[in-house]
Length: 361
Image 1 (cartoon, rainbow, N blue to C red):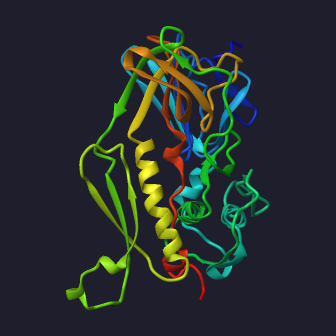
Image 2: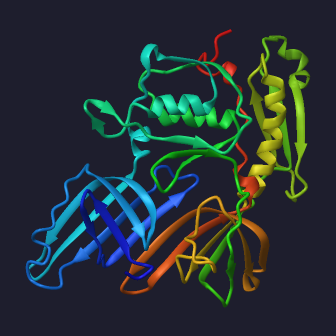
């Protein structure tokens, strides 16, 4: 089997020979997903191929898994002289997005975001003897804060809760190739190589944006002071200036008061400035291979060097935020990647004490 073949395994059946392939993974894209198509070369070649929607599957590129989850759609089609099949699916974490959260009593106390995510994810997955196998959750961080009490709001999804708590705990939440959920921080691992104009870059463009950044970030705290005739400057608790913005542009951030509100609000002003700068330069490249110089597949949340002289851009450390593996008859095997500065993925500081009664007082 060639290194760039895609194989879908459903139970004991392994299917390869797809004519067009798309597999997408990212640190802001949950769940990972895929879409593949096949056209029969000989009469009745596909007549015995039937895959039921909802069945578990594993998608591999070469020998490496990239998505583990379920078939969402099985779409056979015909014309007067052809027969084709298209299959699409998502990782196991799709159920965290689609389904309402549940836990006995609707509360989880004295746990980290890891423990909470593990509990919420344990109710999903295929059932064996009436018991769900669950979705695995892991982290490489050892400084996650203890959250005194989390209340599940009726109707919100499991990932809505996990995402909120992940931001408070300063971690990202995305899925791995085995279908599990991973809690981590941005950009420490480095790929063996990067992207260089004239070497492995077929196409590239950069979105340099000015509308995202401000010269002044003024943080105000909510107040019960009703004497507005005295002005509101007494409620201002922090100011951040960004010299990268070449004209006067002011953004006001209204903070939640009480508890950790002041400290979180100061951090929020600094976060707005740094994160917006990071997202003001988005690099998108199309590479001529799915793999780096060591033969490893391009991986989200990996640092790479980028050299694009004609676009007047170079960096030693850009973060792969999303990668799409493509293959078709027109362009062969290519990878489309989105790259940003790691500062674009600093988690947003939030004050859970003022959100939905999240913590008991």
